[in-house]
Length: 164
Ligand SMILES: Nc1nc2c(c(=O)[nH]1)N[C@H]1C(S)=C(S)[C@@H](COP(=O)(O)O)O[C@H]1N2
Ligand SMILES: [Mo]
Image: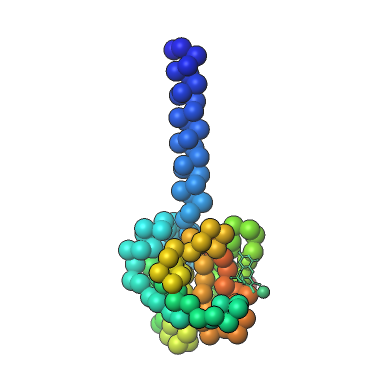
């Protein structure tokens, strides 16, 4: 091999590694106390049932967020929801983690559709456009909360654990 072809080959490998890293950085994982751990890409998320909510952002302006209901993702992963959310399963919590190290916690019961009529959305779009860099590709949107502190940006993972 000539020095030029070696350089080209190394360049190609670097591009491949970078692309793989970028793709992995764009996924949402669901792990912990679930029957089927998931790693979802943006297109996996698009294949699930879509939900839309209108919610006010921090500046009090209304926006139309679209994505997938958190419960739908947790159901797909086989989390103990609905009829299975009783006994020791009521001591489970969900921790959502972001790329910047920010973490927010929910009890599993407070996100379950049978316990509460609220929608928590794993949003991937706002006002018809993909979430911007630094916010997306995924963000939690919780329309019924007065403060958006749990609207975690750059959502990377959802982990379900026992509190005891
Ligand atoms: N990843 C991540 N998400 C986050 C935060 C953060 O520091 N990191 N801050 C939270 C807080 S405290 C608020 S008030 C809102 C602010 O949302 P905004 O950036 O859309 O105004 O984002 C929430 N989501
Ligand atoms: Mo905040």
